[in-house]
Image (cartoon, rainbow, N blue to C red; front, side, top):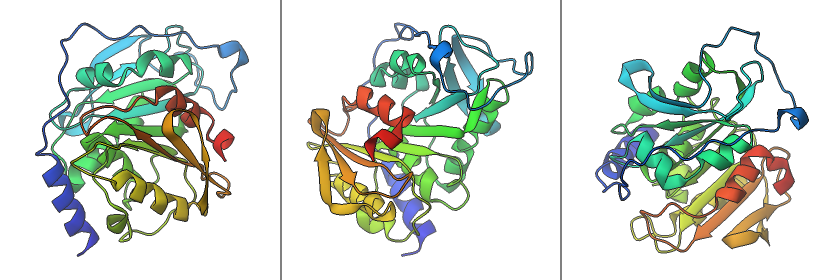
Length: 282
């Protein structure tokens, strides 16, 4: 089966799954301040060149009406080039519901990230390519280091995060990926060529009856691509395993939670640390 045929089939099917359990809209979690005084500066924006506002920015839109929601550190510096974290939603889920589901805002903004929560879109190759344009759109309004774009997401969103790293037209976008409950198997990924080593943190719950065991398979594929020793893994906190002897730039983690398919896994502290400093996990 060709790559395009496969991904259209799997993504359309995944989009039919029920979304994560919705929560009442009680507003976004509080933003955190970032310690700019001790931050590593990787780039600057000239004063007044970015119109994006500090704090909570809802209802942003990219091409074809894609809606997303932006969160900055509470003390956002519009001249400092921030790492960007884009979080893609599960089927039928809004970015605001996704924010409440993941609980990432405070931890991520406190680590210096500008965070984007993208509303769900029915999946297929064109929509994935459109979702890949969000970082560039955000960088036109907020001060972003486009070489430090990380992507994550759950179910459909995890599938998007992983797809962005392997599709020819999008693979240059993410500098690190952290898919959760993604609808890919190791066999599926064999249709794609390895790219240059990439930090990858695969999250998957052991009670996931929709995609049982798929996370372990995809983590092993990435470990091979990142030239790790698949036989050597180091145990980390909370059920994470770090593959050993990976190539520079290719830190690879597999984190297995205890919930089912609809549950966002509880690895936020490890996730933010990994995306901030993947070299520590080599």
